[in-house]
Image 1: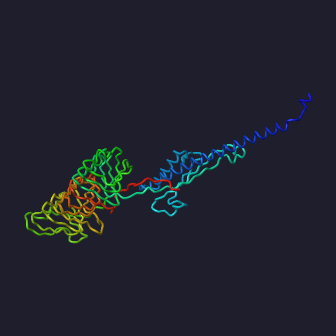
Image 2: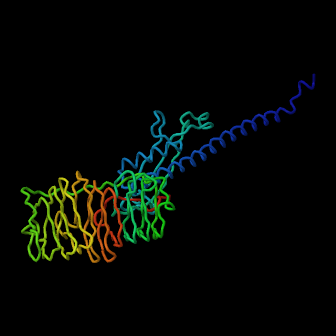
Image 3: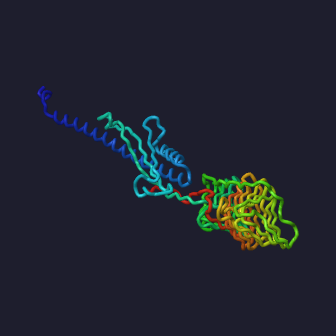
Length: 421
């Protein structure tokens, strides 16, 4: 009975209870802290991924809306969903970044993503109901996904869009080749032909250069990207205004001298066909715009002729043929609506364009034939300075096509965006 009435040891029990409660409290508090750190890491991963996705969209030249949609989608995949009805995540993009080392960047090169979302707590909610949720947030900056212009755009969706042989060459210093074909033979380079451009991109995901670059064909320091998501389809210029179209003005026979074309460099002359023959004739092509309506623009072999400041528009099934052995020197206009464009075949026409030429032919200007196949089959001394937009391009001679970025025919990424902050 004295044992039951004794008070010794009560303090130890009370201390045990207090210590137990404290330990449970600290454990619950540690659980909250650990969970917060876990969610913070997840938020950082979501911010990193959102910044990269948005930077890639900008590098491809897509809109801010597309960048936001990509950032939202990748944040959702990382557990931060902006579409939730209750306690949604927030994904905010700043271009350029609002702070940090890239706050003054330009051209959408760097993108800041701020991601946040309310998350539940455990111990804090039990102590104070107003602390039942806390907001975790993270910030990331991504960039470096560089884009550069396309100067050869081949728009056919299937088949071999670029076919090179017989020592033909394509060179470009600051622009790229874009091939819209999805076929495994989208590009073929054989017979000592070669490509020397920074980047060649193809829609195809199955193109294999080991099967298509052979017989001494080469890709010289050209980076190839397969499975690009954006095809090239450049806008075409406005068509020239014309009315009455004359018959072919050039007579047959040899030993004649004659001048054709508009009366002024800003004027337009329309012909149903135009044949520049090589039968000992001297032909002067006046500067200005030439419309070939329905017939053939034909430079025959054996001539040494040209025109400086000329633009040819082919419409209603018209075509252009420059014979093998026709030493032709054609230079595009340097000013005005059609500056830099040499040939423009109407978007509704699919007549093939054949430019052969002789050993010393020179062509300087864009070749725009968005619905047609273009063939360049020139001699080893031929130089073609041109951008090309066509369904396909075949080069089967020893000439060189040198392209520079005059008009952007599309953009390609030359590197992948990465997190920088």
